[in-house]
Image (tube, rainbow, N blue to C red; front, side):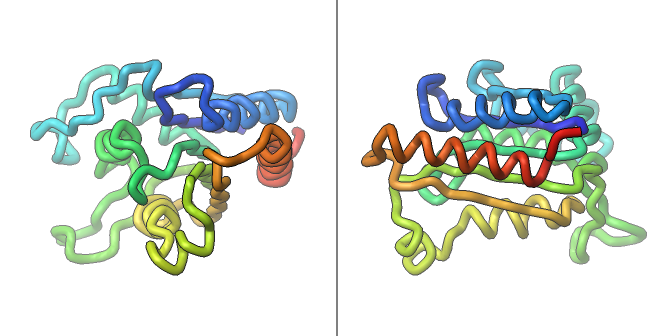
Length: 198
């Protein structure tokens, strides 16, 4: 399978990068093809310019390539930290610019946006790995777990990706080497489950 991996963390020594590298290695060992995008290494411009808003907009070669990679992906895996209950700005900007109308979704007939869009993505499964410094119980009871709602309901389900799994690893800032080792083992087991060896 062709799997798209997106990582959004500025520090290559971060646990996010350890997760993304484990994902890529496991997929490779299982015989899958991958496209690995480190948004910070690519210096992705997260600002959506006015002329890109419309579905018939002319976009740059770079943006067109990202769109093609998204459309061609049979699976999507996103790795990022929880910053203020949101993805980092660079990742949110990537979604804004790449999950475009006509690429990730469309409105039908005379629908001017008031209805439910039709998802266009080919990926069957999306996985999101998050890191956080908030306990899971507090994330749910106090903040209502906004990242679950964002990725599952507002992005992937809307764009036609039916199977979704998300795992939040916490509390990273106080974690031990042993805990992080076990977390990476869990990442590998998750990838083996959703994208087993071919």
